Amino acid sequence: MSLVKAETAKPAFFTVRQFGRQSGRPVEPGERWLFGLGMGGIALFLALFVLLPLCTVFLRSVYDRDGAFVGLANFAAFLEAPTLVRSVVNTLTLSLLTTVITVALAFLYAFCLTRTHMAGKGLFRLLAQIPLLAPSLLPAIALVYLFGNKGILRGLLMGESIYGPIGIVMGEVFYTFPHAVMILTVALSTSDARLYEAAEALGAGAWKRFATITLPGVRYGLISAIFVVFTLVVTDFGVPKVIGGSTNMLATDVYKQVVGLQNFGMGAVVGIVLLLPAVLAFIADWFGQRRQMALLSARSVPFQPRVSPVGDRLALLFCTLIGGLLLGLLGVAGFASIVTFWPYNLTPTLANYDFAQFDAAGWSSYANSLTLAFWTALAGTAIVFTGAWLVERAPGRAAMKGTVRLMAILPLAVPGMVLGLAYIFFFNAPWNPLGWLYHGMAILVLATVAHFYTVSHLTAVTALKQLDAEFEAVSASLKVPVWSTFLRVTVPLCLPAILDIAIYFFVNAMTTVSAVVFLYSPETKPASVAVLNMDDAGEVAGAAAMAMMIVLTSAAVRALHALLSRALQARTQAWRRH
Image (cartoon, rainbow, N blue to C red; front, side, top):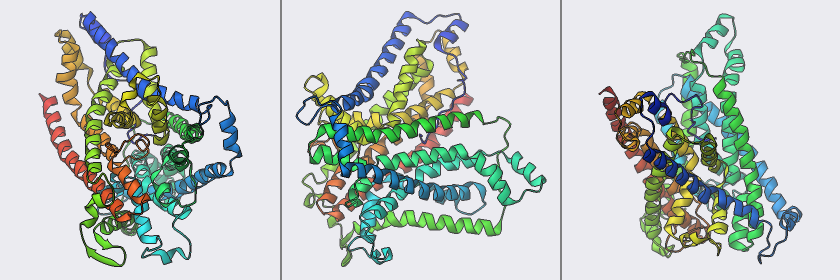
């Protein structure tokens, strides 16, 4: 279900054992020891920060709040609690409704980007990515400003309240829209033009071609988008926390059980229930992706849309409407952060950015987020890329590599709330020698790296599979040490992908809430949690201002990434020519 899909074709490179044998040089004992140590280190990292913490969630679910073993009593109590059962119904119902709306809008948007000649496609691609720059709390805050009790557009709801299902669905559509657009844009971009030519020659009309070629051709992309959106809504904490009102959702129930009631046993049960739909969606999408890859053809001809004055204008109108709504929702939060008192006194002011008047941490929360994002990008990129290189290139037992691959994929199916809860149980346990990590910045960095490990791993694997085997074969024939080849050849050639991974970690560390909301201390509270706390305290203007600082930082980093990517691509191409 990731946004970056790894290719499943057989890698076009030699392992060290293979090119060592072909060059007449076996793998040196020191190299084999280094590979074994590295592979063991990656396996230990994933076991300590993904697998074992998750196991403690299942163990904690059979104990009560006093630590006494109660077996399945917590699960029975869950089934007997009307509010918790209602949370399951609410979560599934609103997730399905959001998925239908989001995927439908995203499909039309992606179709306009790939199958028309409308103007401004580059701009609309950028507009579709706006929600990725902000924590999920921001759309909920903006909706409160628009449709809340003091909202300027509350009359449009015809007496209904934004605090509940309406607000949750609207906020989640904003939050999940870019993920669906990215997946469906890729799916619609890979269609075979020969099928359309044959259908047109046989007299099939536009709607017939759409129903018999376009939809079947992107069905696995649609399936993937559906499961991605569904999982994101099921596991999201920010939107229902801010705008959910009395509508309970599973993600907020975990928070209430742990933070509000200190009932860790029931919190573990709700976490397991929250984990189930995410795992099921992940498995279904994994099977769909395997089928999709098997249907690709090397002889496919890319589809080129024809000019259609009416269709292109309609596409432009639709994308302008959707892009305007995305930009408008962000603009409302930005505007509200610089006015004196919404909506009565709209005089511009920067007083809302004096965070000390809203939160004791003041600007230090923003500084903590920068620190968290920096170390997550640095440590996460090093760990992920080295781990992917070891898995793909190192000699070793297939069983060991398979185990590491499985653990690397596992975080994709784990909601952030569940991972954060797991870290409480694992790292706060008296018997754990790693308990000193708890409540420090290190635990936030490790949790964030683990939470976003999978997509980064798949990105690194894709980049490594694109390298020509000749580089390493020549290095082996010249008896160049493997680690020297890694640092002097592999890393420079993969710098664009490494930069992508670093930016991915940085931006997600700035915007994440669910993975760190259980783990921070007053000294390490990140900006996203400060937004949550200020909103809880009724300081919505301060929350909007802090959220906008996250957006501006993420946007600046994305812009820097675009500039560096162009420079790196030019440098890599020149490096390869020489």
